[in-house]
Image (cartoon, rainbow, N blue to C red; front, side, top):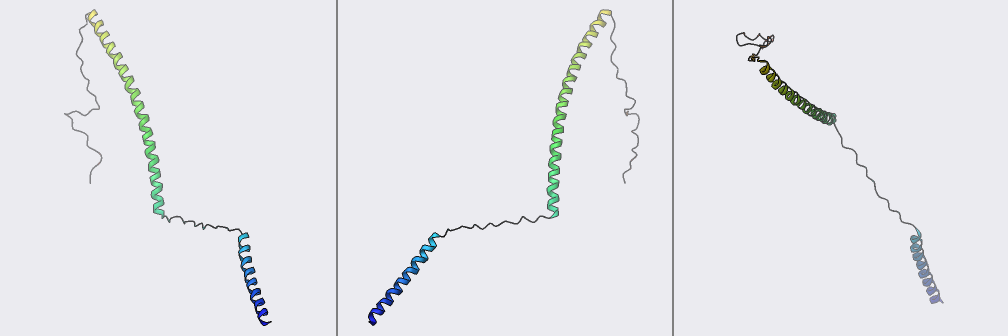
Length: 137
């Protein structure tokens, strides 16, 4: 009887261990697994006032250079238009000069040589240049 009791006790312990193992694996399978990703936010770099001022200056200079470039493009197009108009005026003056020459020949007028009139505001070689009001130290 002692041996049956011992076998019964061993069978009960084995049965109990089997049930515990089965329950531990069975209950773990019904649970859902969640993955949690760690999100690490980097802190922004530390910027000094000098670096911010330098960046602002660079932006201002870029805007200034863009503005200057646009103005030069506009100036170049204006100069092209002026050059075309000056060429047209020159062509008309050439036609007028030839016409005047024909009229003078037809009327018998002797053309006089062109004399350059001196500009009263232009400095001459005989007069010294006026002294500058600014004196170097």
